[in-house]
Image 1 (cartoon, rainbow, N blue to C red):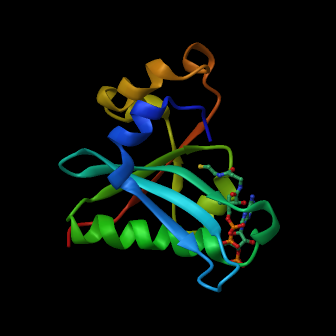
Image 2: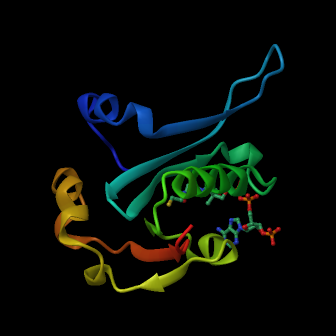
Length: 130
Ligand SMILES: CC(C)(COP(=O)(O)OP(=O)(O)OC[C@H]1O[C@@H](n2cnc3c(N)ncnc32)[C@H](O)[C@@H]1OP(=O)(O)O)[C@@H](O)C(=O)NCCC(=O)NCCS
């Protein structure tokens, strides 16, 4: 959702999951990344569904895939910084103060154009102990 240098995308490439249309003329339908930031915390990043395919459940499937991944990794909490709070609400996330998240999550933000004026909202889901 935010411009990222090529090197940073490559650095995090294994975080990404894509939804593809597997018909012969198919292509990319959506994308998401799960980035582990601590022993019990991960961030949902770069969630996007092709504009013409939104509202068909693809975003939900991508997010659920990441949540299952997080559970398998025995992470207890998953958060996102977003404007789409209602979408995340529907999947059980709740709003939290950005400052309640560990300081280390802001490491990547220094590369962001919005760094000094970030208006994204933090949402968090507690997965609980497995
Ligand atoms: C936000 C986004 C990823 C949602 O993906 P999607 O495939 O359109 O969403 P889904 O069809 O899976 O929707 C799942 C549920 O959330 C709801 N929902 C989806 N987008 C919503 C929104 N913006 N506001 C409120 N509810 C929304 C759907 O109605 C659906 O509800 P239901 O289960 O009760 O039917 C997609 O709209 C998108 O790519 N937006 C632009 C990029 C963006 O803002 N990404 C978020 C970055 S964190």
